[in-house]
Amino acid sequence: MVLINENYNKLEETYLFTRIAKKRAAYAEAHPEAEIISMGIGDVTLPLCPAVITAMQQAVQEMADAATFRGYGPEQGYTFLKDAIREYDYRAYGIELADDEIFVSDGSKSDTGNIGDIFSVANVVAIPDPVYPVYIDTNTMAGREIKLLPANEANGFCPQPPEWHADIVYLCSPNNPTGSVLSRAALEEWVAYARREGALILFDAAYKAFITDPDVPHSIYEIPGAMECAIEFSSFSKTAGFTGTRCAFTVVPKVLKGRDSEGREFSLNAMWNRRHITKFNGVPYIVQKGAAAVYTDEGRQQIAEALDYYRANARLIKQTFDELGFTSFGGDNSPYIWLKAPNNMTSWEFFDLMLEELNIIGTPGVGFGNQGEGYFRLTAFGSHENTAIAMQRMREYFSTK
Ligand code: PLP
Image (cartoon, rainbow, N blue to C red; front, side, top):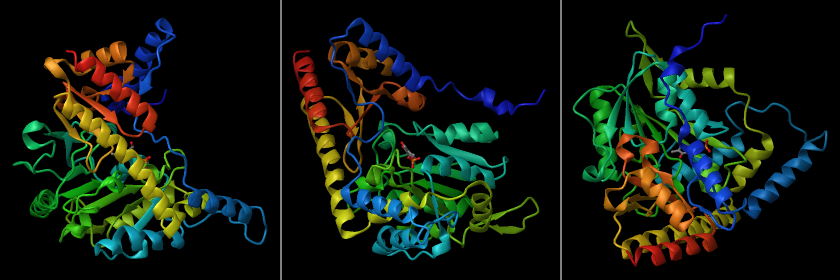
């Protein structure tokens, strides 16, 4: 019989969303009249914007004609999309990237998970707690040593560089699940740490489109010296509603180096390119045409409207909790609101209360790590109508308590 990768035995059960789904189903069966509102899963509700739809329809037409049909494309992505990324995601913030420093992919989940392929299992990895679970799980699968960086109220859910050495550090800003953001000064400290320690930062910017504060960088490369110590992940999922359409991109600067056990230096860009072309065959042309349309004047205006729609939800949620006297975080520069459960309730106790008394589903904070115990994540990705109804229920229930 085949020998398995025993590291998989060390993975925590992915029971979080399964347990939520089970509890919801059981409640719905017992209370068929209940109108349950989901503010739990981080998926968008608005459809793709018209500019994207038109571009994808045109691309479908091209695929229908032998003269314009396309088969395999460049694994790293078409130049028309990478040029738009270079212009609007980077040059607009004073960052110059070469075409071959950008790798278009089918998602930041895959990229943040797969990037580990090019690193030794001997690296010590620092990961914030609570966190987007992919970082922990993929490093556990690889068998790397993980050290946690506690994120809590004392540090504003933004862990500082530790006293100890790490080889790889995961940072996510704006953060899932806490909604916290790393300011320019905080990122400068991380870049200084990475350069001092010879560490590599893996910077997940999946929610950068929600940033409005000028003091919060959209890219880690806005910090001088970051090109020499950071890889950055971005995605069209939350920026432009591509969660089901699938398109993202990762930047691996050519100056980034790693070393082998004998101290010889290697280009991480060349290694990621080798990994990418070996295991990935490119994002569909139709999808890349849709993604490129996000950067047109029309597309930018339309996605700005969609982002404002979610921001209005975030403001309403935050304002409701403030008025009710809850302690909450996030919601500015972020679609996530991180709520402290009242009266020292655990995350799951508060989940049950919200489901049973208010018919609202959120995500227990403890599902993102032990430091998340006692917290609860709500998302602004719902419709205005449902968000308003949910907040009205909150007011009615908690203002009498
Ligand atoms: N990174 C973070 C922090 C996320 O929360 C998510 C999705 O929820 C992703 C990456 C995944 O992005 P994608 O849809 O591009 O795979």
